[in-house]
Image 1 (tube, rainbow, N blue to C red):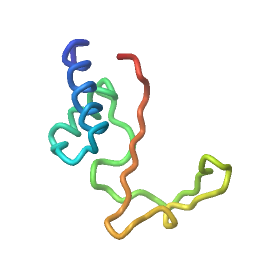
Image 2 (image 1 turned 90 degrees about the horizontal axis):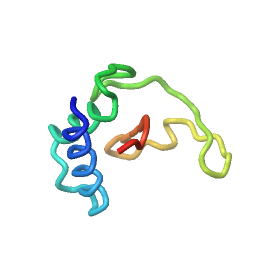
Image 3 (image 1 turned 180 degrees about the vertical axis):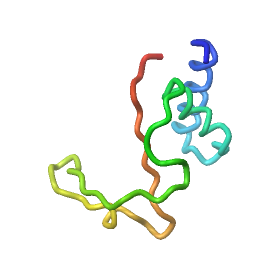
Length: 84
């Protein structure tokens, strides 16, 4: 993906996130993830169930995945970099 297209996608979705994110379409989100990953395919597929894990929160308290899940699931977003 060329740098201009990548920047356009990243800025567009981030702008929508800033406004609450309600109008982000699935196809836009997939493009956003692909723009961040530069074509690398790592981790679970979109919609796949992940194994149980525990990570520290911002206060250092251990938080298992099941404590973070809400009635509609949990959205995990991992960003590699912010080079735009």
